[in-house]
Image 1 (cartoon, rainbow, N blue to C red):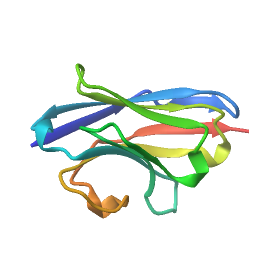
Image 2 (spheres, rainbow, N blue to C red):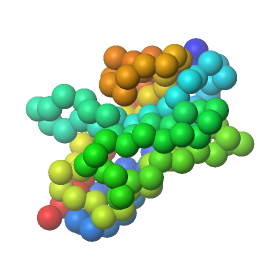
Image 3 (spheres, rainbow, N blue to C red):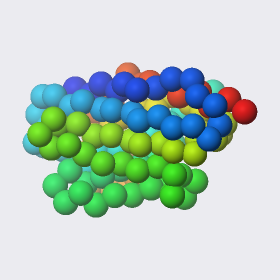
Length: 123
């Protein structure tokens, strides 16, 4: 019902910046929120940032506050993650996700997922 596709990942040096994009299609009107998660090798998928689709309210995990910004473009039905001052610990596969109801900021609260885009930050 909802299709998501991420783009914008790549290899950058510590201190650099990347902007990730997530284009949504299908029944996006049913989405309550959209967010970003990441998963490093051997680790669980973790919450990074989210935005309420209608109100624009944003949420961040503590480790990225002040460095990452999530924002949306309603006309393009796209959500972005601007990542500045990147650190090696930010490395992982970043996934865009959509939730169709209110819930906690964890993977099980989100119903639709993109395929992921790799972000690698070197020292």
